Length: 150
Image (cartoon, rainbow, N blue to C red; front, side, top):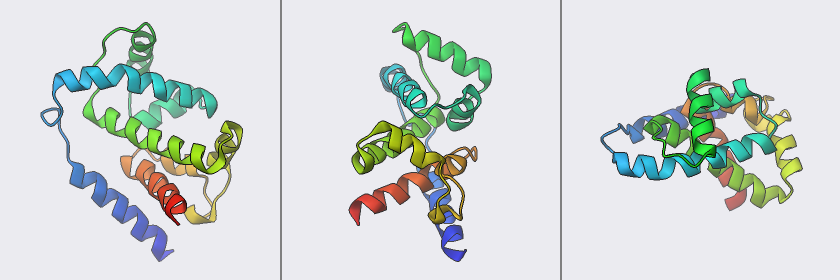
């Protein structure tokens, strides 16, 4: 499983290289991106039939924080998510976009993320993404991008 370890190390190195902080993205940009990003994530979560717990883990947010921010975003209120959450949403949008290109049918994409996959040592992509780390999200995103690019 050397390839799997290398993939995880590469994803962790990529995530660490970003090393973004609140100072790297202006509060105005965070407010501009947060509502639309969270609304997009919630639509993806619905298509993928994710539990609330899965949603919390994917975004790295506490239960109450996600519920409060989600309600505000759905009402069209201005919210400001942490940079770490915006990065996770970006990774999830990348996974979703790649799956839509590969499968073109939302139900097939939702099935794919739950199916055991040899590329992930027999684990489902969703389990990799639910690891709690940005590196898990990026590992799945990079795998799908490689599939798209041959």
